[in-house]
Length: 235
Image 1: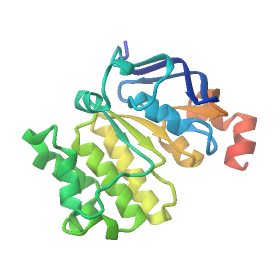
Image 2: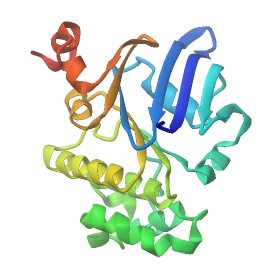
Image 3: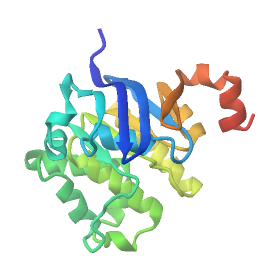
Image 4: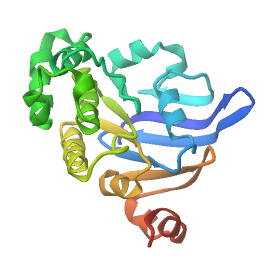
């Protein structure tokens, strides 16, 4: 039987009077890449933030069988749930190497080994290890944000819009990186507007629209869905 890593059931999240998520059910099992697709404002980031312990909610959000509402985000990180946000949240005045080292502050025993894994994943980061993060390109900063998240030794890695605004050549690097991350044993929840990118990597996909799950299934199933093809794949 497959282990359930993240279990979201009947999830409701509000921002004041505005309902951001309404009755959402999502599951993420061991070793999967699960994609969340949908337009801007659909609720993808809200779901990612809720799963990471940043937002109040009604319903069920369990990580490894325990409710996230009972834990601080920092405790979830220590337990293996690591969130790489859309904003990246890098320390711009610090070097690439320093940003990576800060990502490992709860795993100081093997941080050098984890840094080598990150450098193998994204060789450009090793080339720029002494460079200030704020002086890097957007794509390089995205690599650094993912690399720093990996320094925390994630069990579940939540990636929020990792391809946003990236040039095609950087997109290829991120794509290869995500494949290697999964091969290393990390489970991934991928919230992404780039539907084609998500379909190429995910084992299962959920379509969020206006705070609700409108479709779910394998990439093969959803590629055959007339609505998905017309609205999101341009076919």
